[in-house]
Image 1 (cartoon, rainbow, N blue to C red):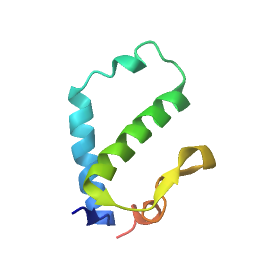
Image 2: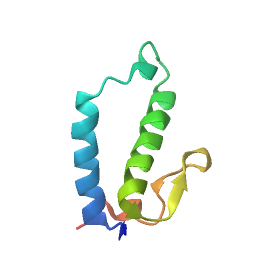
Image 3: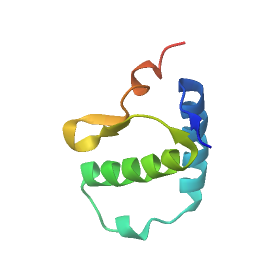
Image 4: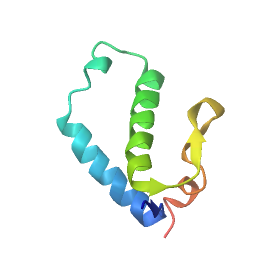
Length: 78
């Protein structure tokens, strides 16, 4: 059973995802110069990563609500 995504878990998952992605060559992005396309690609990949581990209300990059829509607002707060 997947756990509920919290701010603490989101931060931990983001760190783990970044470590994994740093070692992975995203061949789909070679030669891509559109920063928004790169960001959307990585965001969708991160959402799939989170979805395997946690339950949360998904955001929509097409609607301008990035990442988990009910947790991301508090990431920078203690």
